[in-house]
Image (cartoon, rainbow, N blue to C red; front, side, top):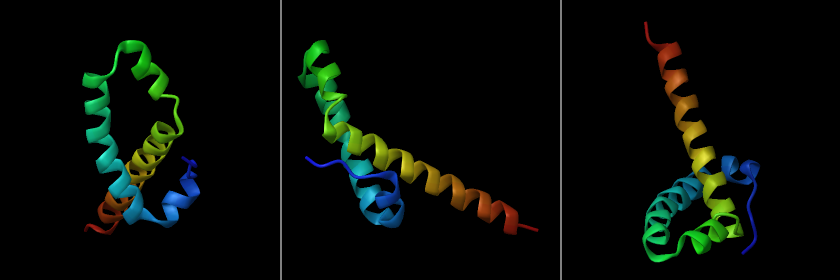
Length: 74
């Protein structure tokens, strides 16, 4: 699996949000299904790197939008 950059996800926020939502569920599944060692190994996989990037970009976009709304409030 090829990793995607934060810049890519920032330009494709809908995709980032979909990936982030899927990854949250996937992380819970992996925690329950894998041994500690296998889970740690999965955490350095390209799949999980993509997950972390998508989740970070999605969270940053939400914070940015919140700050914008607060700045516009009277």
